[in-house]
Length: 237
Image (cartoon, rainbow, N blue to C red; front, side, top):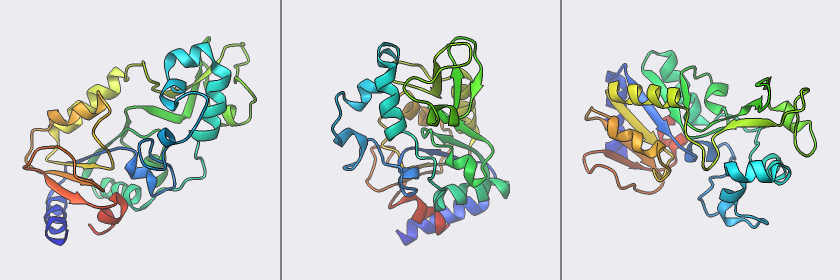
C-alpha cells in the first residue's frame, strides 16, 4: 500500500479542493455496525427484516414497532469520531477539503469538527413533528416510550431517509456541485451499491480519484485503489 499511499499523500498536499464521499465503513471504527457486514443488522434476526422496518410504509403502518427497532439499533449516541473523521476535519480546517458527502446518519463528522457535511440520508440528531413541523432533538426519541409525540399530538419522525423515500433535492444538488468541482475525490468505506447516492461519483470531472475500502470496488480502472480500514489509511496521510 505504501506506493499508493504516497501518491494519495502527494495529491492531498497539492490540493485545496478535496471532496470526500463516505459510507458506513467510515463509522465502523467508531463501533457503529455496517448494515451489510457479517456482524451487521442484515445478519441479525427480527420479526421483520431491517429494510422492511426502516421503510416509509412500515413507519406509517406500524410506528410502535418501528421505534422499538430504531431506539435499539439505530442510535449510537456514545460513539466517538475516529481517525478518519478527525483527519477530514483537519483537512477542512487547513483549507484543503471543501466538503464531506456522507451516507451516514450518526453526526460523527460534525462531532469531529467538520462544518460542510452533506448528509444524503439525513441525521438521527434531527427530528420533526409530522403535524406542525416542530423541531426535536434526539432526546425526544430517547426519553419517550412507544411512539414519540409532539405537544400538538402529531407523531415525531426522525430526519432520516427511509426506504421508499427520496433524497433531499437541495442536499443532492450541493453534492453534485461539490463533486463536479473537486480536483481530488476520495471515496471511503462504502460499497457503492446504495442508489441514488452511489451514482453521484459519475459527476466527477477530475483525474485524481482514490478509493479506500477493505475490499476492491468495481470503479474506474484509472482510480487509485487502496485496500484497508479508512481510519488507518487516512491517519497516515
